Amino acid sequence: MNRWAERLWSLLFLMVPVAGVGVFIWAMADGYGMRGHWLPENIDEQGKVIDSLFLFILGLTGVIFVGTGVALFWFLWRYGAAGNRDARVRYTHGSHTLEVVWSILPAATLLFIAIYQMDAWADAKIRRPTIVVNGQEQPKPPIAEITGRQFEWRIRYAGRDGVIGTRDDLFTVNELHLPVHEEIVLVIKTEDVLHSFFLPNLRVKQDVVPGMKQYVWFKPIRTGQYDIVCAELCGWGHYKMRGRLVLQTREEFDRWFEQEWNNQELRSYTPPEPEE
Image (cartoon, rainbow, N blue to C red; front, side, top):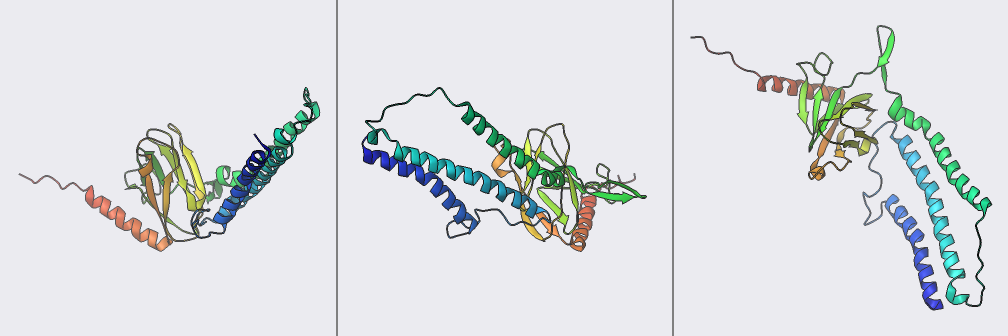
């Protein structure tokens, strides 16, 4: 390989970090051709914490990515074989100092990230919202149970008694209605294989494991219609396992619930047998 070919390959390697950073900046700026390719609109009260954590880790790893790419470019440019034919090859059996340094630095970085994100993790996965009942604080009960199955989301709302699993529960499929400006708790499970319950706009994503019940919680701050997605490859129909999240005011939600509950009662009504 001649000197010019080496320089060309060096520049091509340099284009990897340059192009990578450029595409990210292009998407973040929502420029033409990249509209809608960055994070979806955040509609959760605590979603900004998740976004800030994401951007921090992206920036940290981005610096390492760019530094590695530039170092690779420099060594290819400076020490190519075509430009160093007279240089003697020097062998080394390694450096314990370098091995310790490049082992400690990644470990320290990962430890820092783990500590930095502990509060965000606790708020999203551990500190479930609570209510006070008879002067005692207890976990807030879920408003609905979401069951993933190939290839749909089955939704079961607590009925008028406020308890999931009784005869007055309300059932829907692929359409989840919730009130805004309230702490929402959902219990999710799967009927068959692994699924992943994903609400992109609420920054909620939870894998659903057979035989287990998981809890997710959030506080939506905006009305509208948004996507419910399965983020786990769950079979041939995974691509169509999609639902709709409808966020409403409390008054609108109560009216919808009452109407759906009454319609369900009518559908399940069995008239008595005529007397002979």
